[in-house]
Image 1 (cartoon, rainbow, N blue to C red):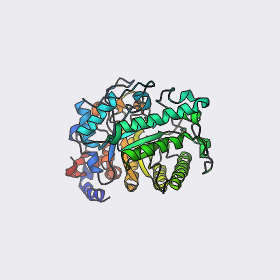
Image 2 (cartoon, helix red, strand yellow):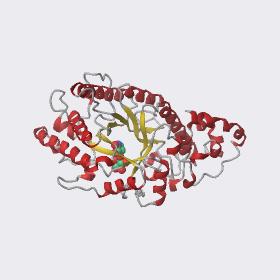
Image 3 (cartoon, protein in one colour):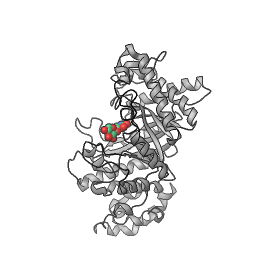
Image 4 (cartoon, rainbow, N blue to C red):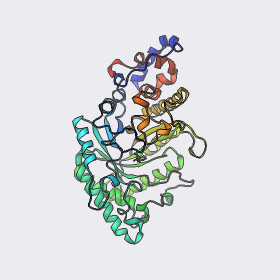
Length: 413
Ligand code: XIL
């Protein structure tokens, strides 16, 4: 909190220059460090890729690309593998292990003193169908065996090189209907998930969610009792989906605590944070993201005694095919980024980490929405500055952008 108040005074003399045109945007290697700016509040994260794999033809391989390595190590404390620790990548066939990419990522983090978050163990997507026994209930024992084996082997393999895991990803669908309560959250689960179809969610029998977390908890306790186990999902700012996740975590944690001397099963909720600035039409059925809803969800999950992290942050604006996006769009996006970071800052006591899902728009999985802090050729966008000092940005963006050095402590440059 203190840092932002300190910076506030510098603005007054600069208001006069607001319309005088901007100074040239600093090159990406002359920017203040986001992770240093936010160090008193939460660690900052981003994704990492060891090889090029996108369908967009953009270069996303960070390792070995000096500019991308620079941005990662300068602005972020912790990385998540964008794809290379997912089930389909690591284990395309039974018995076939593909861990070369993940190994390079582990080595990178160790060489650069960065932290690593594991993503993800159990998911309906990017998982080979053989693993959940083709989603067939008559083979549920095989699916359970495959799931627990995968969790055990993968967690033991990475061991202490990861500090936390997304144990379970996205068990609820994009949109959850009304009427979610403590007794009926299971009725809202994503019913086409292979794990759901193969194992089911019986509270008194086999429940794939319970099996996944209790297995991961057992292995985590062997490796590192402080390892943080996440439930991770998107659209958690939506009140209905927030309720579904809230009641799920509450029930499972209460049951596990009762059976295990108060021990917590699920340590953290990961709010992915794939947000959007625009909100009309079929492409954006949820409406523009409301920072008030984001705040409410952080506080609701925190009230369960779990941590909250923003795990996959990106904010689309428009649906452009070409870049750069129009200045007006860039500003609209940056304002929402600033409001979101005010919400994160105000709830920092609950937030364990804020991780972006990518560095630059061309390499983003949502490239058409230009959702990230850097644009073409790694140009820092207004959103970069909005994150660097949300208060100054929202107070007078033109004054701030005309001379960011006047608003950001020299220690961070
Ligand atoms: C995305 C990756 O960014 C893409 O490269 C890949 O093709 C699909 O998955 N939720 C998640 C992430 O948990 O793993 C997804 O990542 C984005 C949505």
